Each structure stands twice: as structure tokens, then as C-alpha cells.
Amino acid sequence: MNKLSLYILDLAPAVHAEFFSDMRLPEEVDVKVYKTYPRFLGGLQAPEAGDPNILLFLPSGRFDASKARQLRILKIDSPMYIITPECDEKAYLSYLSMGVSGILTPPFNKVDVQGVMNGRDQHGILFPRNNELIREGQVRLDFLVPSKLSRILGVNRLVSFLAAEFGFPPEDTRVNLPMVMDEALSNAMEHGNGGNENLKVHVRIYVSTSRIVMQIEDQGEGFIPEHIDDPTDRENLYKGSGRGIFLMKELMDKVTFSKGGRLVEIEKINPLAT
Image (cartoon, rainbow, N blue to C red; front, side):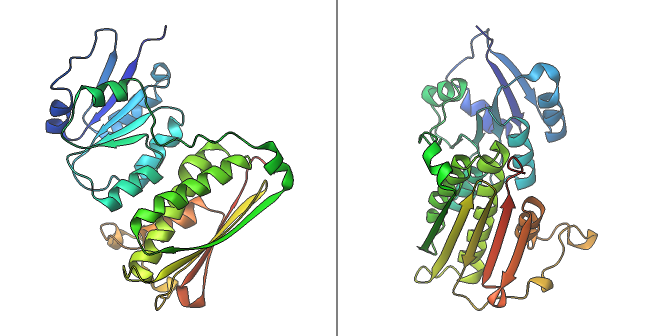
């Protein structure tokens, strides 16, 4: 029987102490605790790391999306949990779109600790692969969603499921595509429609074994994409805007805007089909 490994990034020591306060870990559990992200990343990349259960003890606020994506792709099959003192709806949905197995907030109990030790994943998609669907060649979907952040997770799961069914690699189905859809829908709901729940977001999805195309259109006033500052420029490094569009362009093969910025079309080529 393989020894259970827990790799912990401890950026919130008080939360870490509270989480394990009612339960002492068995001696056979191999626990490695890192206080900084670079050391934590290095530990996961070590040959002896294997596929540990990953615990991220984070202060309040959103974790850098690029770091979460890096961790998930590095350990695509490892259970990953975020443990934080508080988590609003936007952060919660963002974390799930990054492929984490769960988000835990106080009060904690022994069941929570045992759950992360067992690698329990409550958010996985349980549908089996459907080879007949793949042989059909393509699926097209066209639907409207209200401007409510709580609706994003359902769309993300749908995109993840469809991409997996059509043979896209795990880093795309579990991380890249859900993360990009999260950014596009969040932008459409919050910036495009101004958070007005009476306005809708129009979603169109086309997927085949060779590519997936997603269109997200809001009912707002639009914007000029060229006027968005480049977040990689030195003077913009600490600005909070523009990172979502930059992320989409970095992860996808094609991102285009039309209808005055109200419609974004995103395309990803399946690297396993070329």
C-alpha cells in the first residue's frame, strides 16, 4: 500500500492550525509543508513527489489564476483543495473553474480533514465516455443564461464534459477551457451587462474531435478591445483589469471580438487530433 502524501502550501498559518486542531494525522502520512509558492512548486516537481493530495491554505481573496493553472497541469490527477477563512461567490466559482477538488471554509471538523486525506472529489463529472457521440462528429449548443455568477459553474462543467467526450487532453478539459469560459462569462455578466440580472448572456458552443468554438455575447454597450491595457507592461503589472482577456489569448488558439466588443469568439484546436 502506498504511503499517503500531503503537500501543503501554508500561506495562512492560523487557518492551517485551525483545520488540523481536532485531528492528529497518523504517523504513516507523509506531510510536507511549504511557506512560499516557489518552494512549494519545487517540491511538487521533485521526482519523489508522485501524485500527492494538495492542500492550499490561502488568506481571503482570489488565488492567482496562472499559479492555480500551473499546479493543476503539473499534477493533473492529484486531488487539490483550497482552505481559506472566507470565500465569496466569485472566488468560489473561479476556484472550481481552475479544477480544484473542493473549497473548505471554517468551521472545520474531522470529516473535512478525513475528506482531503482520502482525496474525495465531490465536483467530478460522473458521466461515462460516449464513443457513439464522438463518432457523430460534432455537437452544437445555443442557449441563454441570466447575468448571475452562480450560473457560470454549470456552463463550465458542460464545456469540460463536452471537451472530454470529444477527446481533448486533460489540461484543456479540466483547466484551460473551464478557466477561459469563466473569464468570458464573468466579463459578459459583470462588465458587459453591468451585473443586471434581467439581462442575458447568449452562449453558443460548437465542438468536434478537432476543435471547440465558444461564442459569448452580452447585451451591454460594448467596448473597444484595443483600448484594454496590456497587463504584461511594467506600468500595468499591479492593475486589476485586462488580465482576463490576456489569459484567454494565451490559452486559446484564437480570440476575436465583434459587435462592438459585445461578442467574443474563442477557438481551441484539439492538439491530440492533429
